[in-house]
Amino acid sequence: MMVYSMGLSGWFFEYPFVLMLVIFLLLSIPLVLVLLKYPRAPQWNIAVLWVIVVLMTLRSLNIFLLPVGGEGERLLRGKELLVVIATLSGLVTFALGWAIVWTKYFKTSVRVRNTFA
Image (cartoon, rainbow, N blue to C red; front, side, top):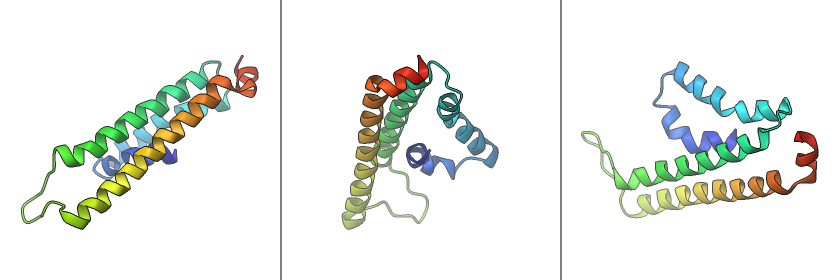
């Protein structure tokens, strides 16, 4: 859930509470499938991990490709922009690494194969 909430956190605070709750419930489906030992749970988890990586990347790029400044707001420049780039790059890199590690685990683990076979 940490990776999921990181990827969408900027969007969550803009959503109504009910919609935010629905999104969290949808993102928890892979966890529920694992707990229930649903045979296709590993594939669901892999798919959701990669969807989140793509969404995080798109959300991060959106900040630079479509900068929005309201009236009286200034757009990021200089050191502020570098801090934002470093932070977003770190989050996307972490999510990518997380997805790679878990994808490999779900595909090669004997334990996963025995649990969900």
